[in-house]
Length: 210
Image (tube, rainbow, N blue to C red):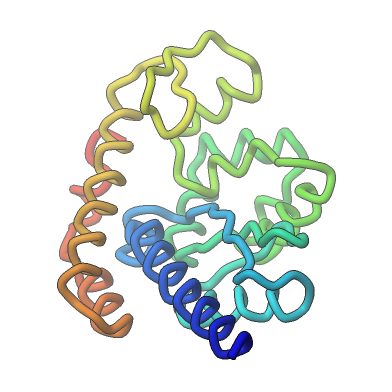
């Protein structure tokens, strides 16, 4: 009986985790955001069983991902859109900043992800903001401890001109709210993924003001 209850709890946890990830990665799935960094708790069990359950949920999500750290409590994973991530890292301002800090910018997405995982072993790599699509001015400002203009509720620390950063935050927030509505009205993950991926937003509109 205990095992049956445990299996039920774990199964429910995995479904809730998949829904959470579906909402939080909506902007990545439809190509508006290059990547999302999320910490996902284990499914109640520590060790290999818990890690396997988390990886199983990641596989069901159907997005490319890279695990940056993993311990007894959960996994920190970067979910990404390969094309959009490549574009974000190739941005002239981002690439110049990363090159000065010793990143393999000429190698493409794969080597950059390898370097991110390697650096993360020594603690958070603040350059990850560029992987997440944050404006280069904000990532550079954070790394150089520039005066910030961050306000309560901001999704990252803002430096310099506020408008572009806040418009981008609002866009990401709207997409998450829309994806939450999709999850409420469509029961199956397949249908949720299809509707989110098909969201029609032009490249020009997604980058307007960014």
